[in-house]
Structures are given as C-alpha cells and as structure tokens.
Figure (cartoon, rainbow, N blue to C red):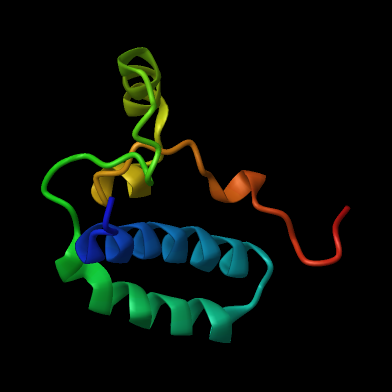
Length: 94
C-alpha cells in the first residue's frame, strides 16, 4: 500500500502536538513555540475521515474503544490513537 501524503502530514501534526505539550510541561518554551509554528502550518492537512496511524488490522472494537478515549488533539486531527503527552517520557528518564 502506497503511503498517503495527507495521512502522513496528519499523523505528524498529531505527534507535534504531543511533542509541544511535553516541551511545555518540561519548561522548554522555545521548543514549544517552534513546534506550535509547524503545527499551525500542518493544520490544513487534517483528515476528513478517521485514520488509525497505519494500523489497518485494528478491529472495530478497538476503534470504538479509542474513539471513546482518545485525546482532544487526536480527535481534532481525526486519528484513532491512545497517545497522550502524559505517557511520553522526559529525556533522561528511565
């Protein structure tokens, strides 16, 4: 299956939000601002239909579960993912 450019940009936008939130949480204001600028440029690439970040084998039950529990950012980008900034580590953590 050939990668979809719009889907890739949408996934990137969603991950940028996570990275920005982690940077903000860690007091890295300059990094957060730089990520926010890229995020704004990618806004036009949001998906019209839901996507699963290339996990085509995801069952309907898994999709429903994620749809009910995904972050506001994932919902905004129309992605079914359980990624949250709270589960993203801080550099140096083990």
